[in-house]
Image 1 (cartoon, one colour):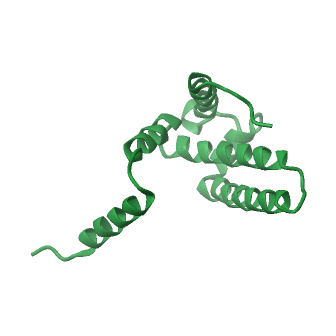
Image 2 (image 1 turned 120 degrees about the vertical axis):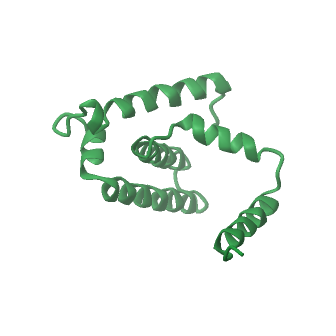
Length: 131
C-alpha cells in the first residue's frame, strides 16, 4: 500500500528531522549519553558510515525477500533507516536534505545515461595534466 503524501509534507518532515539531527551535532552540544544521533556523531564518520553500509544492505535484502513473498513493508522500514543515517552523514558534512533536493532538481530532465557520461568526462578533465 502506497501512502499519498504531498511534496510539502515530505519536505517538512525531512526538514524537521534534519533540524533534530543538526541539534545533536557535537558543536551544538549534542550529548552522546542521551542521544543515539549524538553518539554516532561523537564516534565520528566511521560509525555512521558503517551504519549507512549496513542499512543499504538491509534495503537490498528486504527487496530480494519481497520478490520471494516476503513482507514488502520491510523495504520502507529499511529505506527509512537508510535515509535517517544518510541524513546524519549530511549533517556531519554540513549539508541538508535541501542540498540533495537541489541536486536532484538540477538533474531533472537529464537522462541518467547522459548524466553518468558527463561525470566521466569531468573526471577525465580533472585528471588531465594542465598545459
